[in-house]
Length: 410
Ligand SMILES: Cc1cc2nc3c(=O)[nH]c(=O)nc-3n(C[C@H](O)[C@H](O)[C@H](O)COP(=O)(O)OP(=O)(O)OC[C@H]3O[C@@H](n4cnc5c(N)ncnc54)[C@H](O)[C@@H]3O)c2cc1C
Image 1: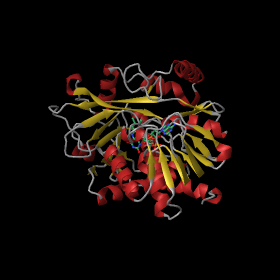
Image 2 (image 1 turned 90 degrees about the horizontal axis):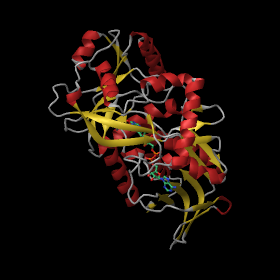
Image 3 (image 1 turned 180 degrees about the horizontal axis):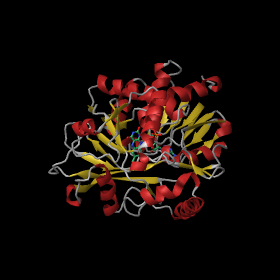
Image 4 (image 1 turned 45 degrees about the vertical axis):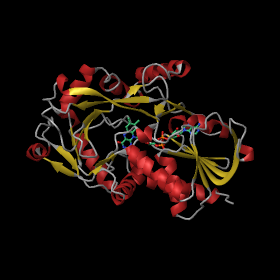
């Protein structure tokens, strides 16, 4: 049992929480920082289980929080990774329309990318073939994003934790079952200990809505987790794209579609995925162990209503993406990008992640943007979905700027 106090308590030691600690130190706001995580090791959820793609900022509506933080965040994370000599593959990304009617979306992405400060170029069929000889574009056109890169996300998390610890940040790990007492600015720990704080920042990813509720925050949101399974090209597959290959996404839903991603290091592993299938437990990565039957039943109801209402074009998502865990459908999606891929070229990967996607009960839609909501002596980061990993340094600055006027430190 221990009693502990700090200026800023960060709940959740994923990439967002760690970058917040980094920026609080870097900007000399406070060095009295504690990071609390329920797991005994960091990187066990989204930050250690994602594709590791540093997005270049093409997808996001200009003016959205995602658009404001993605390009700058990617530049900073790239430099941070390079300075430390961690694995990074600066291989760029190609986006192709798998169907002719999606060709015009390339113009939308190019406009958004340019408005967001990203570099984008159009490619013709010859240029596309030069980058990935086996790739196919339904219209012959493609977009090229030279500044997209791939890193190893778990390496980044582990190194960041190590550096923060060396700079005096306290870590309390393996600590679940605590209770918030917002009026006393205190967390009561399950072992009878406590943590007092001046300000708490909730970066609890898949659990962030549950952490927010006792602070009176976020009651209109509920988490709708979507699982991302990955396949990979077998080592003996003759096709091994050397750059990211993505389809034009459905911009109505926050999923990018199944894509090919080369490895960050010299291992010749090309991932295919992730899928975006409704998950029946927030942390149900494998089997049925972590299924939450109550949540699953409620979410099936929500999904069915979304389908019937077709809000935000939800039916298209269901038809095109919800069932991609089935190998024949996954192969078909992969073949839309590279027709020569055959079922015997791919194998299931060990990697799997679950997105902390929020559903807004008032608008009856999936939330698209990051949410950073103030509460009593607290800030709650909700819906930290992709590209929160890419953007984390810049997102941390934005969260701090928002909280700064109400930070009551020391
Ligand atoms: C399949 C998949 C692929 C993705 N691909 C990309 C990509 O290529 N590029 C990109 O930029 N983004 C990608 N993302 C998104 C990215 O991974 C997340 O946006 C980012 O990691 C969010 O970081 P976080 O710190 O908010 O959450 P997390 O990494 O989930 O961290 C939250 C932490 O909070 C802790 N926690 C939870 N509840 C409690 C509690 N009650 N008490 C204490 N601690 C708690 C957890 O243990 C966890 O360590 C992907 C996500 C998924 C799922």
